[in-house]
Length: 205
Image (cartoon, rainbow, N blue to C red):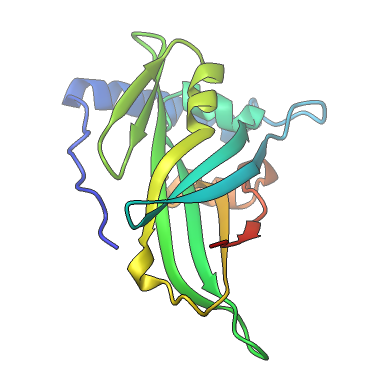
């Protein structure tokens, strides 16, 4: 499968420097313990509530309802200028008798969630297509991310008609693109291990 073309989403230099200063300040507060998570703070939750595929014009498309609730620490980082990358992973599995399932195809869809302090708006960027959507509050941005409709998965010609298949999907808060010091900190902090369980169902004819 081919990824969609990506666009250059880099902000102007002065804006990137301003955001970087906010990230550095937030890292300092985090390291000093001033932004330490409290026991009563929301740890966040990612969940796939439902998912299904539909065959249209020889292509399978995915519809899914995802629930996103950021931890307090992740939300603080977002508002300090840290871009949060949210991955949606989809796999087609062929059932093989007396052996492990065989992965036939997989898809990675990534969205960047950003907060722009000057406009006080939240921006969702589809990293695969470059499409951008702007929202007045975090709730609306997360609700938008949670409604996945008609995402193309795989051509039906690649599916063997006499085989049994399963599809599974999960969503993850990725920390791979974080600056080194932040990535190291998040490795040890449970509020950053936000990921759903795999949601699995059989492919029906």
